[in-house]
Length: 264
Ligand SMILES: NC(=O)c1ccc[n+]([C@@H]2O[C@H](COP(=O)([O-])OP(=O)(O)OC[C@H]3O[C@@H](n4cnc5c(N)ncnc54)[C@H](O)[C@@H]3O)[C@@H](O)[C@H]2O)c1
Image (cartoon, rainbow, N blue to C red; front, side):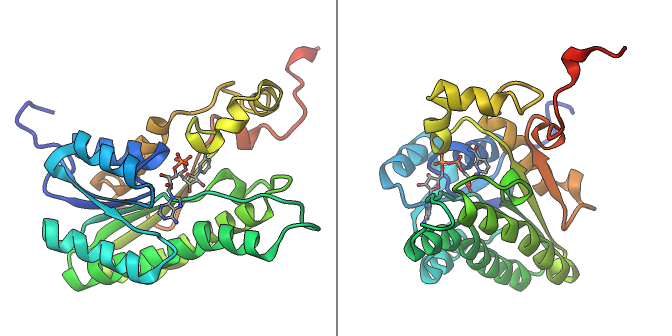
């Protein structure tokens, strides 16, 4: 790439949910570094304001709850009003409540599934409407989780919701392909963000996780942001309806660890 080559997202507008922290913040920051304008959506007003200060004119912060359809629609409208349209979307916002299947309150199930699954539907619905209306295609990346494939004790609403995100992404990819809109999902494993601080801050729990991960460390938010941007980039122009697992090899390690037994 010569010095005069424009950054790969120059002239593109991206909407990022969950942009105030962790993976979403890393995605938003890298997009701006790589030339995009970013509508940064989150409910965490203070952290979002700080991100906007850091990113300057390339960032339009929008305080919105992604489970609220009107708020989601307004965030898309903000992209059009501030930057003239929308090209890319990254649906990252998420969190979870936990509990055993036998104890879990309906409110905790609804909170989690609404946030991790229904909100992705609402976001894609309104983002895709805008992309279809513009008629120039686009790309959407939804953040699911390795828990879409691997269950977690106490995490049934999260795992179920994330599995739904993976299939929803494939379904949306199928429906939106004629409009030139690509939809893919990423499935992160253990990533060092505030969401998993309780795990990483408690050595016995951390050790249990790390012994499952062949690379023996959590990933960084930037190590998820990079693959997200790749899937949204022109290098991935022929990739749609797929899932990219970003887990340090966690998913392939479900067999007993025989490495200390030797080969004899
Ligand atoms: N960290 C991990 O190990 C990991 C692993 C797999 C998947 N994920 C997924 O990655 C995504 C990002 O998580 P993270 O680890 O960066 O967590 P994080 O807590 O650092 O960031 C999540 C962000 O989402 C925002 N958010 C929560 N509810 C919202 C709502 N209703 N409306 C708008 N914004 C809302 C939060 O304010 C926060 O800024 C989530 O979907 C999470 O499930 C994370």
